[in-house]
Amino acid sequence: MKKIDLKSMEINQLKQLFLDMNEKAFRGEQTFKWIHDKLVQSIDDITVLSTDLRDKLNKDCNIMSLKLLKRYDSNIDETKKYLFLLEDDNIIESVMMKYKHGISICISTQVGCRMGCSFCASTKDGLVRNLTPGEILDQFYSVQRDIGNKISNVVLMGSGEPLDNYENVKKFLEIIHNEKGQNLSYRHITLSTCGLVPKMYQLADEEIPINLSISLHSPFDEERKKIMPVANRYKISEILDACKYYIKKTNRRVTFEYTLIKDVNDKQEYANELTRLLKGMLCHVNLIPLNPIKEFKHKKSIDKSIKEFKSILEKGGVATTIRREMGSDINAACGQLRRDYISSK
Ligand code: SF4
Image (cartoon, rainbow, N blue to C red; front, side, top):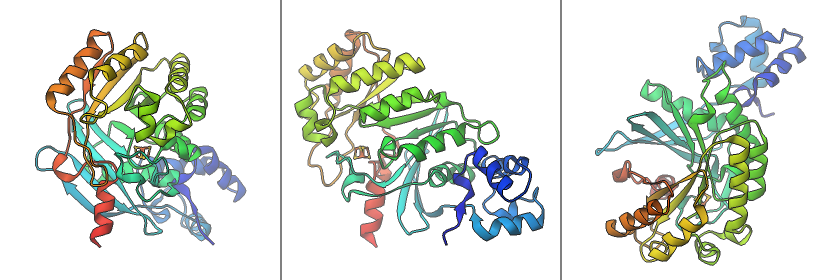
């Protein structure tokens, strides 16, 4: 029988687990603290519990840990990329980036992805499975342990569509925010979605005011359909309505991610239409120069087009930044590292 992963359990579930074992509920709180604050990796290390109690727990439970398979260190900045092995031999990747304002980690929420965005390596073999809350959390914990420094920001923008793994991602958010664990502010967490509209409304109604980021990549529905199959299900106008609802409920500024692809979506008319759509909204556009993958035969926009695109948006009153390329010498494209590693074996 598969053991219960204590790392994936919220504090109330842990309290209930101990009550079910005829133990006191506060043991659940202690266990939570040791797993999510002290970052112990085995039940035997929770020395605040008696040996008997740890033996009892060990019968049906464990604390899952990712195995570090490989770390790639950039030579041009301090970016580090990690490949982790899961218990079922699947592989996921995470990226650590150092900024002036702190250390950020980009983590995966699924093995693979079923959203089919044409520019993304993560989706090329479809969805393999959802990650558990423990597997999502342990990317953060393993990297924090490895670098010996506190991570201050989390971005759910690695492999997978986070809102397609809604319940596990929600649990992850609640656990990482819990004051008895990492106590990470919701303001320091960003979730990136390709625009699963019903789930965006659902998230807005939770009391979890994280930053929301939308992978938009085109202001025209027909064009967006060519690179993002999800556009066949939800129109841009529906996504924008869901964003407005999210802003109203959370008072958080929404970010629109826009990957600039040479001669595909970097022309003036695209910038003009994007400005028209976003003008007046509490939002921000993040322009991303394409990080090409083998399977997507397009190039990144030239610098002049990127600057012009930005300038049109800004003149129209839409706050815009160009994402700094981090760790470009160690293959940053989403899902590319994992694919390269698997195909080299
Ligand atoms: S960009 Fe995100 S949603 Fe699209 S296929 Fe890649 S991982 Fe999935």
